[in-house]
Image (cartoon, rainbow, N blue to C red):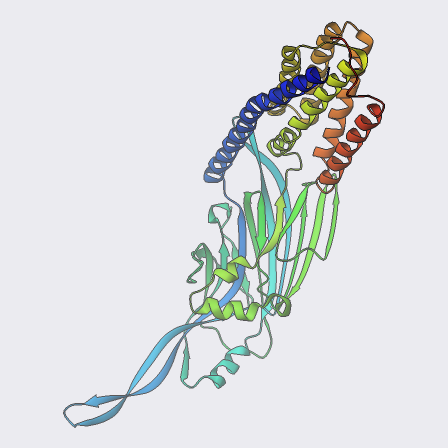
Length: 442
């Protein structure tokens, strides 16, 4: 009997290895379908707009720094002083920047694939401290000549700007034009202001922006004090970037979130200084915002479920092997293989059905189809509908536990570990009185 058991264990192990082939193929199918979804996403981004990001507004004031330079005079064999100048730009950030946004969501499809998109109505306002011009002139070694300035706002994908925005500045209205006129972040817009002058009082500004995009909307905390408040009808937001909201509220109807960020915590003066010399990468990367997260990503859930496939097949084989030992049954390796294939086909059914219906409905349909088929087959193999029904109920319970694990992102590892430990404990308790060396007839 010992030799027979050892042979059966080797056969079961070999079947487990063979069943890894269809499971690997199913995993590749999940990867391919996910790739097709990403291609559809890129196609929608090309015809709609991509993820949006706003950096600004920045008040950009070009200037000439005049200075005297010694020039050698060959005729007089001596030096003479000539006027020279460098053209540069001064970037000023708002003392206070307030942005409020109302976001309405929708979806765009390519074939069977859907991607969340949005339309947003943004209102930006704040003020600039123009006394900084005087301070800059006093600190400069050269005579400063101010040139016409402009207000610049970077928009990652300007196709999303639905209407030409208008800037309110010192009681006057200015149109935004394409291009930020800022080296290192050209995508966006700028509003020419003409000559700007030093004033003792802060200069207020405001503008509205109708902006649509896809999946993400992010901002940069360029103000000395930056306040952003968003409201949307999307129930599953994911807050991203370097700063989390100070307040947020999420329910089935949508979410609201607000951020309060100071230049002290963001290190914005250093980022602006780097941008003035053409290196704006750090400034563009210093962002925060929201992503329209899809809490039911069928490909991610399917991929995670396939990881448990070998465990489910192994547990089922262990149960059958115990039935053979404890009840004196004789199961052929082909019967093990057919049951293993029946368990494997569940994952293919899951991914194919979930592309056309809700994931929960697809999971329930695939579970019932797989377990009922296996239960019906086993009932006839072991000539006991009662025992076959027990096996079916056991499989249903396992799939119910798997569904809970898949939807528990934070506790998935803990739940999976407890499941494995519990099943191992049950097997050990059930076999604690078995004498594996006893001789029994075949």
